[in-house]
Amino acid sequence: MKVSVGVATMLLLSGVALAQQAPEEDPIARYLYPPDVIMAHSQELGLQEKQRTAIKNEVQKAQSTFFDLQWQAREETEKMIRLLQQSPVDEAKVLDQADRVMALERQVKRTHLSLLVRLRNLMTPEQLSRLRSLREKR
Image 1 (tube, one colour):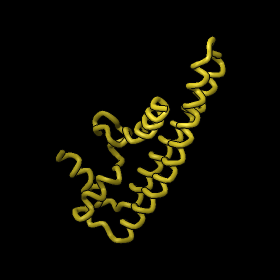
Image 2: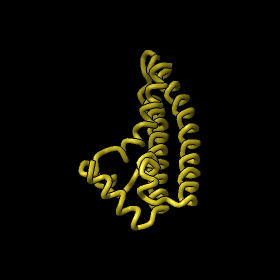
Image 3: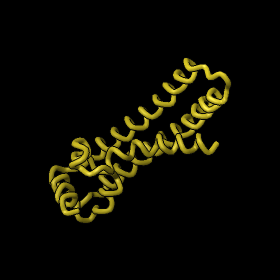
Image 4: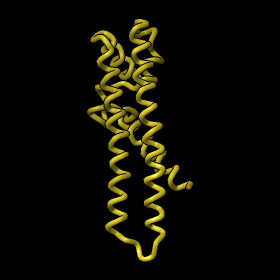
């Protein structure tokens, strides 16, 4: 069970890594801003109440999806562990199961990227410029 929780956690955290890498390390992250950064600077950015509500709604929607994917990943990882415990190990079955686990990882990453793009699209050009300036100061 500990292994499956660890793998599920890894799947969820791998999606977060996209936005947490330094911009110079990840050319994509340089154009995206995680919700915690946006909200931490909401006053400086001059976020409108409508934007705050939209950000909150988008994050809640993504968290719900992440939660569902975490449960699915646990189940699929446990199935793979059971396959690996057999002797001899059926390589084809393990690889098929690994494909299922990796498909869930892809869904996590896609959901996370979608969230970040939606948040970016909620921001005005001026707010995005301020976020870039704040990032450069770090």
